[in-house]
Length: 212
Image 1 (tube, rainbow, N blue to C red):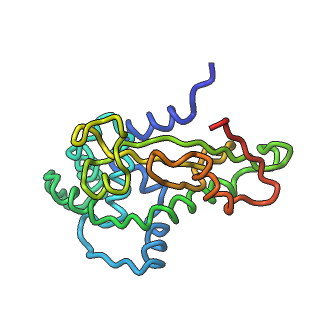
Image 2 (cartoon, one colour):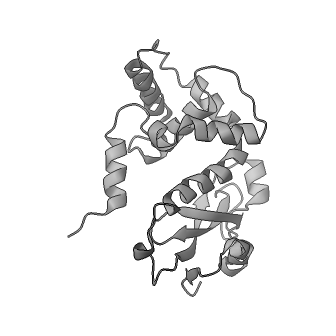
């Protein structure tokens, strides 16, 4: 049985030391997006780059605690021969809240485009790119702002549920990379969200979807 490549890569990063995503998502690429958006930051330990690398690892790690994320930063600093920072999680937690959400869409596109450039015609279907779209829901932090934008399910009592966000995603069938994302309250249909992304399709694209 062929191993699942995604699981193999996930295990590889989970077993790594420090901040392995610094190699996958170079500092220069993140900086270019920050410059385009006019985002300035102080030269402290938890720059947007360090926070982003730590956060991605935190999502993938079996131990997704703040303390484990900070341990990765400490290991990364130690391997680089730099002064080892405090293991306190406060700085990382505050820096994560400061990270601008606006940087995520362009970074997502940069990664996807880099992968797309490596795809040969032989890896496509009849020489044509195949894109699939599907939707999922995500539970969000139970804040007033999230409840207002993404209300919880109507069959749950007020105060007993979490805000519910629907994500509609275009992804490349060849690379598995997410190409575009649309977000809305969970009551919005998949078809309606998909139509928001139609403008990103290109001539010759082949689209695959379920019956929604």
